Amino acid sequence: MYEGPNIARVAAVIGERGRAQVLGALMDGRALTATELADAVGVTRSTMSSHLSRLQQARLIAAESQGRHRYFRIANADVAELLEGMMGLAQLTTPQQTFGPRDPALRKARLCYDHLAGELGVYIYEGLKRHGSFVHANDGLTVNDSGWSLLSRLGLSPALMPQTRRPLCRACVDWSERRHHLAGALGAALAARLMELRWAKRLPHSRALHVTAQGEKSIREIFAR
Amino acid sequence: MYEGPNIARVAAVIGERGRAQVLGALMDGRALTATELADAVGVTRSTMSSHLSRLQQARLIAAESQGRHRYFRIANADVAELLEGMMGLAQLTTPQQTFGPRDPALRKARLCYDHLAGELGVYIYEGLKRHGSFVHANDGLTVNDSGWSLLSRLGLSPALMPQTRRPLCRACVDWSERRHHLAGALGAALAARLMELRWAKRLPHSRALHVTAQGEKSIREIFAR
DNA sequence: TACATGGTTCGATCCCGATCGAAGCGTCCG
DNA sequence: CGGACGCTTCGATCGGGATCGAACCATGTA
Image 1 (spheres, rainbow over the protein chains, first blue to last red):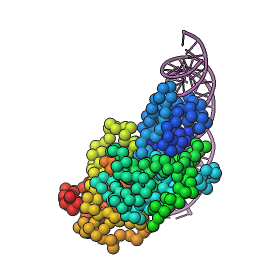
Image 2 (spheres, rainbow over the protein chains, first blue to last red):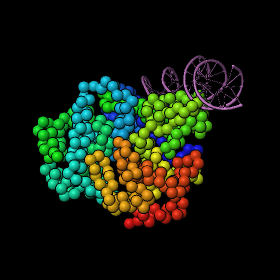
Image 3 (cartoon, rainbow over the protein chains, first blue to last red):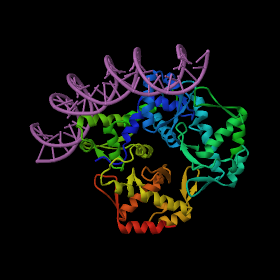
Image 4 (tube, each protein chain N blue to C red):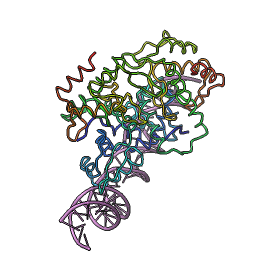
């Protein structure tokens, strides 16, 4: 009767308050230790340990040992994308949930795994699209010359892109805007560059990014219609 | 501490064997009644009823009353896409799960909500891409003249497309191929057309599609390099 | 070598939710 | 109208899994 992969198993792993919070906390791409996560979620180290091992078994997170610490992070971009998609659906069912004061900041700009999401992330993606910067390559999207000339104003160039199998551009669904933002290797490089330029800074203990007035102005100028 | 939408709630709804099976059974886009689903999953009508109400509350499925029957279906394309994405991850953790004999058929061609997935679905999507048929429009992808000239050989034309807010083309992640296939209004129309032409036929009680030899040959000719 | 600190394992407890049968409520059919 | 059928609600039962503290292991530090 049952067809296809066992979806229930993965979902059950995510579908527990504590574990879901762990995933949420890791969604900014950072790697955290077990105790940090235990404190963040408000649970004993022992229970956190059991949660982490289940998450790891489901390949949702990956662990890395450094000395006597173990750092946990989201396993890969696919997982991050799934989680963002899920947030989109989750938001529909609990629309007027009273978020904390950080919520506006989250909607404005945040990290999604390793790239930029939120209003500003969507703005950049759509700006590139408006300028016809995207081309369909053999596998996925690439950026053409006109696109690179925009990006060069941020100090990004093809030569600086890491040589990996990871696709250069991907469109990732944004839960707050319900539109796309830029993911992939370029998305990651762009986010990193914004921090390097001090146009954006991560807020402590949050996925939210603080974007300076100067930074936002510059970005809007570059990608303006 | 907690940021963003409550992901755990949605995941918990999916993360139960019975409910996950319901979603799986509805993934072919059909609408089934409560008793049909109860039989399919192997559970009492009463428990199925409770499952269905939870699924509905989470907006994962939608119900429609017709006389003394209630028909349940996947709520929308976003949900379907999320589920396909989840199958992709689920497959990684249980790679050598022994599927039924229908599995090869599933991988060959199946319905994903209302459009074509599997090897053939991916082939069509990539064929269109190879021919440079996709253009970035204001919102999402569209098809250009060269694309429509390919599609016209299937009897599809812009005029026949339904006038809805639904995007014409979307790229949906395929769990079996781990690549994209064509979703959106065009994807749905294409799948419908294949059945109309009797190039493809749904297998009973399965998402799998049987594609006739003639049908496959024609499709491969149309989208060949 | 001893001690502190990060993490996991173990055993016991306890609660949420999946399950069922029976009863109730509509809707269609003879 | 009465009976059949589809579906939901209710109350009771039961099991899986989340939780904790304590003991244990491993890796640094004095």
